[in-house]
Length: 170
Image 1 (cartoon, rainbow, N blue to C red):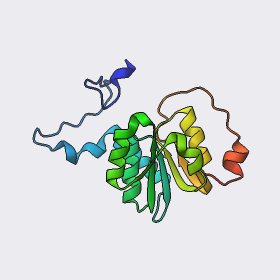
Image 2 (image 1 turned 90 degrees about the horizontal axis):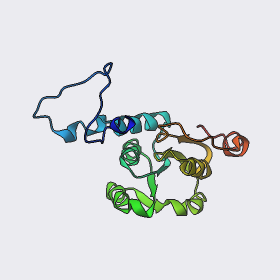
Image 3 (image 1 turned 180 degrees about the vertical axis):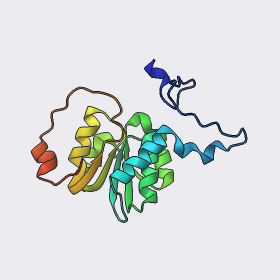
């Protein structure tokens, strides 16, 4: 079943064709945590988005994927990394703050869009977060949809206004 596919589940179904790496029993989990699904996905998103020195980065969604995205953005030299979440995710936003990120609530994103971001990493993967990502990106910026991990309903997007006219890389 699909609920046994995520790496944060207590039990996982491993498909027969899967490759498995068996670690020595004394391996420190902290040394391999970034190799999890969300760590690898975040590293890939940061690389695809070409985050570089001085960038203003927005991460939408402060779950494990979003926090990894924020960490990779900081490691790649972003000037500021903002992490947006809901009131329910306050404790995760506190983790983002402890990492050196600035935080805001997703309901405040329309005002935050007044400061254009160079890169938006959407770690939530919802219709709303995708729309927020496209609204918050600046001219010539890059939006990476790292959290879009399952089929979803079609989303009406004005491709000309959201992407083409502003030179946005999606």
